Image (cartoon, rainbow, N blue to C red; front, side):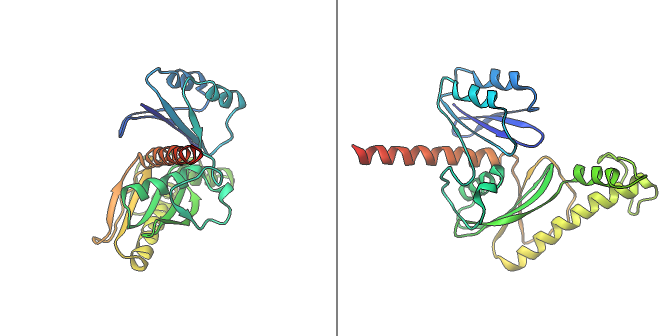
Length: 251
């Protein structure tokens, strides 16, 4: 049994993987006792973790003391099984590269646009040659709602869930419709642009936010909430194979 830990801006996602994903648990990063209790399960034989935020040192130390080997994936340092054109690999979010590796493992030989809507909205592209071309980062829906409140004098903080008329008829609905419809049109614009540029396009949505979109019929659209942990699993197996190969050469 393999443990996969994806530490994001909002949640820590912990996954049991045994040739496929068996279970996922999400907790806040502040719930460190619960994280470590989960990690100490005797059924785990190995693991991998990544983070897009700074991990407290005592949590790093606790990972190092686990009774099985656990690899930390670090962008630009840990080998991955795909090529990358990203010019600043050390600054690339670990979740973005892991998602690209997950897409490569699932759709080899296909062009894949990966859209992750969470704290941020990210748009990443994997070519049919298995090369990560890069991507774009935009504010996610909650960040947009908070920004309208924080950077204006009178606009209220609005919840994402609520009434959505065609045209906002109150300040609350005007903000909600403006933010969510704006993000929806942004996504539709990306998909339409890349649909015209790249044949046999797969659009993979991951992350926790779902929007009602109008997309062309000839685009293959998939939702995969486990794309990042699947990519981390592939990265772990790739590094194990690299280590085995080096060991065999030395023998």
